[in-house]
Length: 359
Image 1 (cartoon, rainbow, N blue to C red):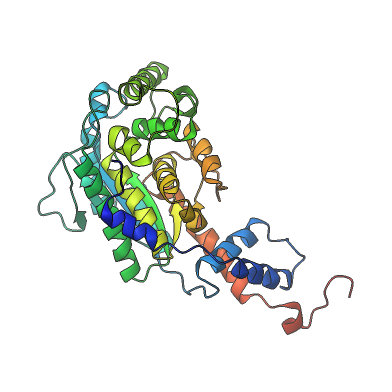
Image 2: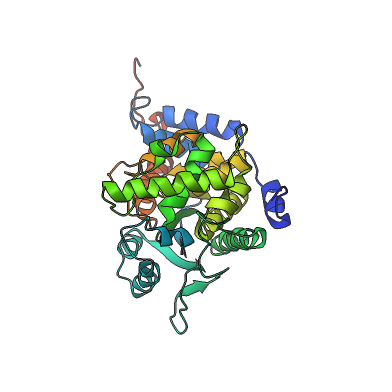
């Protein structure tokens, strides 16, 4: 795909850079709150970023949403996961019945949950609550052929763009990006290797709990897939070509969502390895999105830290998690709102009649 799909190109043209003056204004206020300068640590950095994203007018209360994109992967046929492919569809039903970890955390932290079927290899007729946006029933096996056609890639990107528009229409200010799909750490590892230019062995982990033999099999599949599609030295392949050949429908949809959410001036919280791989693709296409991104946590998957370095993001939490579903991102949301609340609600030295240092 040598050129961007028209809808994506149009969305990218709408992304506004955050103005430096808002960061300066936020720093000035933080330094005049009733506390030693810098004493709130990273909360201050988060507050500055939120103030900049919202051009000096942070909307309160912060309405939260979490979008879980779900799809199957053809590469699962190569035995790259400890779980059978059927688990993807089973987990969709679990999401919709309220029994997954993301359901618990979304309820607890007041994040409206939307589950989007971008490409599950199953039908869900008669099940309420599911956003049906299936592009095809799972990607193709990237070990044998490109995972997606150009049309399918464009369709998945468009799903993400539509969901970001819906989030904006719903008045959501802070959105989490999550996923589910058996085999998707294989795709994310391949994407990470290509984007960061690191060997697959450095960015590939055990995913859903593979033993060492399973991990080695997975690594072999990734190496063969990269050789099949990108067997040439030199420049990094185009990001959309990476997505098309070794990506997945839910990863492509998250890429579109992240770009479109930035265009809508929303704060975006990435979850773990998979959603951050989508963010890395989005960043490679449109670097200006970086100002709108937060890293919810640092996954236990080895490739995640390399993606965070590539994106220039520092994770808010580090809990050794590797579940996905948007769980780490939703857990980080109260920290972000805490930063905003102390920024907006604390008294200044002058308003409280408190003396500054050395006064």
